[in-house]
Image (cartoon, rainbow over all chains, first blue to last red):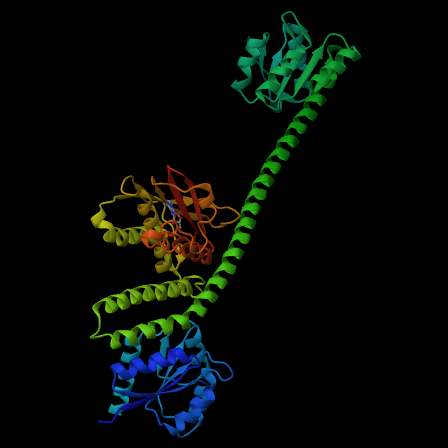
Amino acid sequence: MSKNRILIIDDEKDLCFFLKANLEARGNYVVKVASSGEDGLYLAERFKPHLIILDIMMPVMDGFKVLEELKKNPKTMAIPALMLSAKHDDESKIEASGLYCEGYVTKPVQIDDLRNRIRKILKLRKLK
Amino acid sequence: MGTLDTMTEVPLNVLMMESSERDALVILQELKRSGYVSHCERVDTIDSLTAAIPKKHWDVIICRYTMPRFCGLAAIRVVRDVGLDIPVVIVSDADGEETAGAAIKAGAADFISIREVGRLGAAVQRELREVRERRDRRRAEAALRRTEVELDEMQKGLVQSEKLAALGRFSSGIAHELKNPLGIVLGGIEFLEVKTKRGDPDVRTAVSKIKEAALRAAQIVDDILKFAKPSDLKLDLVDPNELVKDALSLFQYGIKSREIEIRADFAKESMRVKVDRNRIEQVLFNLFANAVESLEGQGSVHVGVMKRPRSTAFPHGACVIEVTDTGVGISPENLRRLFEPFFTTKRDQQGTGLGLFIAKNIVSHHNGDLKIESQAGKGTKAQVILQLAE
Ligand SMILES: Nc1ncnc2c1ncn2[C@@H]1O[C@H](COP(=O)(O)OP(=O)(O)OP(=O)(O)O)[C@@H](O)[C@H]1O
Ligand SMILES: [Mg+2]
């Protein structure tokens, strides 16, 4: 069985390094990292991830904007996105914007929590 | 001495110092002519005067200037000494200007010679009016002072809650900044856990200790963010007695093994407060914990629920939940710093110093107040004051 591909879009490089290492070590995933929204959009088209982990607070292009672009592009619009949120009111902001995402993981990220969420989302996708 | 009663319109309690029965009658006649129903008691010694004063609410004391065993001016002194505002009118045989001056100076309301006794009615009327005015003014002044004190307290409260709000913003700012580095630390720990799975047991122990500490830090960050500015309160109408009962049973369940008894007295009146139940229970929980921790093994904790009347700060009245302990108490220097975040004297027992900071914030967000009084070595009293629902 081929591995599921995951794309992490977050400007905090060290965090990404460990997230990638931990997900690859404990799950059956191939992980790529983009450290800006622009790179993320580019990789989302090329790498064709099964799931995107997207940080909300990023300079230049924030997570809301990236999500909006992903949903506009027919090539990426079907990819489920899991948001990394740092603020308690992030969730209501996304809901207010009318954009769809698969859910939120609050920072600081607990890897077990993240892994469970990923597993559930991917399972649901397979069933469809 | 007898009580002489006459019948006309305005009732008047007269205490009379007069040795001559005849002159006393003249005076009463004059009062009657002026429209007063006098209830009069007559005395003629300093002792009987002193004894008579507290017996009744006297409207006026009419006093002979000179009597065999007594000087009228002494009566003025007696009245002044008991601190009552009763006008003393001096009646005299002679009408020397000098004596009149001395009497007025000593505090007499008026000085009337027996020849011009016709002035008495008007004098009494004027004095009664002035007493009334003075009493009204005193009442107004007292009310004003009370309001000033309340305003002052409110203002202090405002300054305090401004400071707390600033601290709340500050600490939640810091908490946000800590999230990313903490995420990296936690991620790094996970990474090391995998890499050292089959490695040196000492390294694995070290990693697991670091993990524990990092998770604790994450918990603190979470606490700060959740409670430094509790914006979304889920308000319900609840009976404070129930609130305290629930918080107590929850708390006691946790401390059962330590066998500390918390006694509670509930309010007889039924009350309703509009609060976020969970948050207020959390406040009480923190206060209970502090009280029990202060005992260091001996002493007792008491919880009381009381109703408090309306005031400027709490126009619908208030409910006071009081947690008292007989523990170690708090020094005056520490008392000032209680509500600062991270202020703790329990570092070695894993105290974070957020308990009271969070409690104060939660209570402030309910427009209530949290007050703490303490005496080092004696004990501490914490009061949660919540406004009653309309
Ligand atoms: N009832 C009390 N008796 C004596 N000291 C008290 C009492 N309540 C609070 N204090 C003092 O105030 C300090 C701050 O209390 P606070 O509840 O904010 O933090 P803490 O109890 O130290 O830690 P935690 O975060 O676990 O509650 C305590 O460390 C203690 O010195
Ligand atoms: Mg405490």
